[in-house]
Image (cartoon, rainbow, N blue to C red):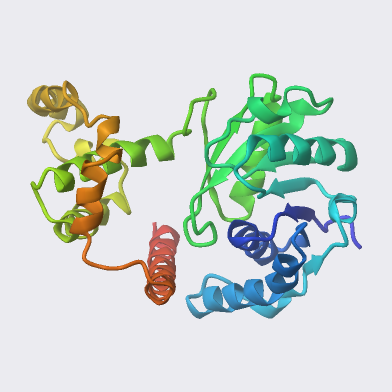
Length: 315
């Protein structure tokens, strides 16, 4: 071991945990995996190796075998967190289990190690309040699949130290992710709130028969999604009016105020509307279809990530 080596514990070796392992190992970190489910832990190394080689095919991992050599399986949580500076927890989306896991991590991990949860819906104040080391605990919510979609939402509890957020932000940036800071806790953080607003309107439009489910998807992937893969909503509207955002607001917000006055409500996720949406989707959810679509999605995302990386290098 040298003074320059860096160590991370990945607690939970499912889909998200394996992606984090690939990300940290690709960036040169030594990764220790642990998971209470023995079969999941045993399967993880081969699956991580496959992901690293898939990344390499798109130029997104320079030395997949070298990265894999930095991944090891720990006997348990105590072994996984020994001497690490960062812990990425990927346990079940269950508040009671989060409380138990973080109590163990706070007891066993080095006192200066950051304890970060991949939770997508549970704010940190709900599972860290009683911990002696609660100032080092926060949420680092990734986007699935994290090794291909780099955004990470950082959100601390009211007692999370600002320097913990800053350290986490720097580490995520160093390993190739794109961290954003949520300034205070809010249900759903930011990404899922934006996704939820769009999804609710999609459920309404399809459920009420304004458009087919497949054409709704085309509206996104062949319309809004193309520019949103490079531009955020504010950057988009800045380019949609000659005078930028002030001009856009003067021209178009009357229309959007009208839409906002009657937003899609919770009933869009209930019967009979949800039944209409399911009926409108012409494909059955077979395991073979889901596996094939997942593979295709990952290949396309890898190509897009490589394309965006090449443009960042030129700019």
